[in-house]
Image (tube, each protein chain N blue to C red):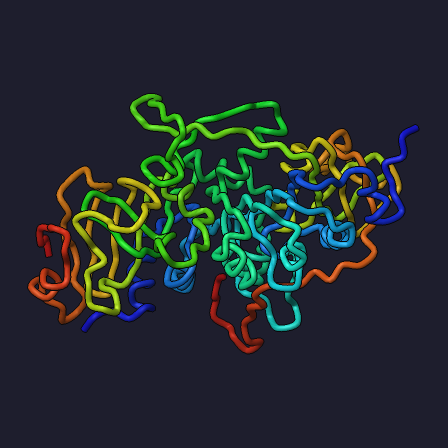
Length: 213
Length: 241
């Protein structure tokens, strides 16, 4: 059976390592914070200008001056720090963030990622996504394997405008995990969700991959 | 002695506003926005503004009120998804829009304020953002040239400030405010608390007064929250935002 959103987040959490500074995107990536293993010290960055994001506040304790990059109210930890958005993106661009977990609209076998724009529809903007994929050491994308129409989102080449070219290291969908390695090596399917077969993944994937499960 | 302290937002902006000007407005979403100065710009009614701000407020609040009044000609932003009127004006061609990646926008403003006319970044290489821009290889990696950015006027929100213009921001309300304070040919600041000179810890000042031309204590701070997100009181497990 394919993974649920929470199971995808739990799988993405296995990419975390003790001591990591991590940036989590909006959507399923946000759920990854719920699966940080006990005893592991991971510091979450919010690109508007904070290191050490704490949990959501209790009702009545929201602070208008304390929000995450998704504009949700959050809390601070004893270890937290605040800085400007220029400093925040210096951290990102400068390669000081170990891991970014992002959502995606399309991923290609060459490591390209599209996740900010659908031409012809209202375009909301890329926010910090282009900076994250350009600067963070390791980029993990968590997304649905197919569109609602059934069309594959893991493609030979992205058809949507790119967020970054050759930037994806690992792709996690509800069907399994692909090692993309920024397109430097052939794509390998390295894990399957329980009950999912390689044939099923092949049928639902446009990108070429080697099965290594 | 030049008195930077003005009595209200109208006096603080007197003589600084004109049609067609470029204004930088601090804030991320509705967090850390100069809401009193935005309201005064609406009252002044200046038009054809180019506004540099990460977002464009929401319907009825923040920069959204300048949209409603059709005062903005062009936005330079990284994300504008919170605003229905924005979408309507953009799709009807009444509003121009230039998207910058958030970090590129922050760095363009920082560079502009620091006298750096351009810089190279990996961000956006191979995407629409790089179109028409110089690209260059450094140490085997490709970079896009981005220009420093300045404005006729920067409007900034800080938590505490003094008559010298020294500023301290609070938590994530800092965001774009410090860079914008440096990049305006005129910089006007509103603070929640205007304190006596000497009351701020000199080692903790985020923006030194040299960047600040005028300062007011904001008359009213609504400080709206865009997405109130909470956890229930009984929850014991650790959940992180």
